[in-house]
Length: 464
Image 1 (cartoon, rainbow, N blue to C red):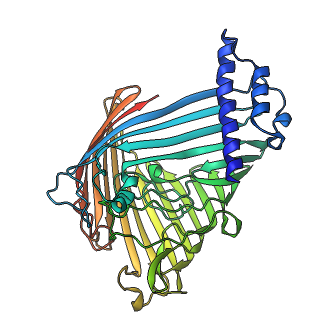
Image 2 (image 1 turned 90 degrees about the vertical axis):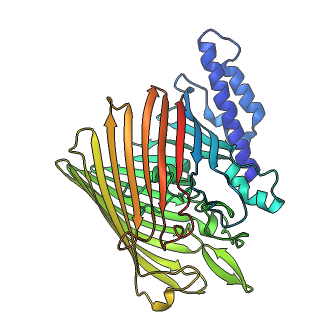
Image 3 (image 1 turned 135 degrees about the vertical axis):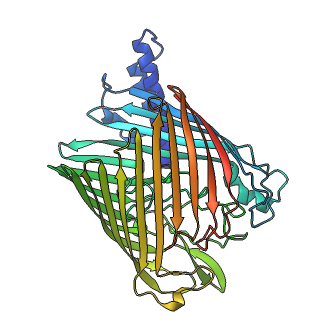
């Protein structure tokens, strides 16, 4: 099956490259023609790919665009303490990373389009050559990574129905900083407090259908890609566990593990509302004993929820509510619990070139028992989180200042992160971001171990 997938993908790449040549031929270069493209595709794939059914090419096929960005990122830890709970010495320069994120968009025929994007980085700050083979395995994810991002084909089946197939990101809810009903895509949690949620979501392979009727839209998702949160590597400065990490029991993709989700969205003058339903594999593992040895397991949870916005002058009010069932505890075989999550938020835009927002959430474990408060990972009846964000633009939007405060706990003293940054547009295609992240100690995992991760950071980004 994988070979077939790779052959499909390779065929598509040849198709895209060939269309680039066709565009050049239109401009006076006769090295490649549509007939030659047909010959290439015929030779490359067999009849099972249905190339013969594609028909001839027309002028609407082959319009494409190439874009993306190149980032150079550095982070300097000025604390005198090494935060690693193991023996790895990170030094003061925690990140010297070059990251490349390309994107190709192709307009196909009949209102269909194709998108291919990816991400690759290499971090020069971590020298792992002198580590043991076991430590290298832990740290490789900190050093380099290559992966696909949004990669899909989408189009209109009829006037009311759209189809989207491939690796996608689906953002549910109204919050900009806290996840309540946003349960579809897993997150990259390897650098807590350094990245906003919109950049943390990881794409999943899925089929998406959208049906539109007046002010309403109905979305159905079939997710056959089982993928979990990217947690800090064992040995990472953000890790709260000792090496080696327990082995994982990973469910297989598709089949009975296929995930399903639906949303109903209504947009009206001055307000909107959405209803959600999902049956998912939990992105966060729990620890279970297998043959008296700890093992990471992934349970299957259900979620039903709703979210909405309404505006009043310069004020935007938002809410989210979710009921999650079948959540499993660690070290308590066969026990499940339910949780009710809720969020209220407000955003004010009445200042000149400035926006301030406040969001607060509580996660309540239903029918909580004293025995749930246990080591190594206590489960408390209520978990509180609050996020304050302030943005201000200067010099005709060429300079943006941002303050982000995240706190946990009923009294906001269970840990958190403060991030302050300035983003300057140097040229239309070049931006420079500088800032500082401060970690606050508390009882909530992982802030009980990562509170010495304070750092200065700088990012130079070029858009093409």
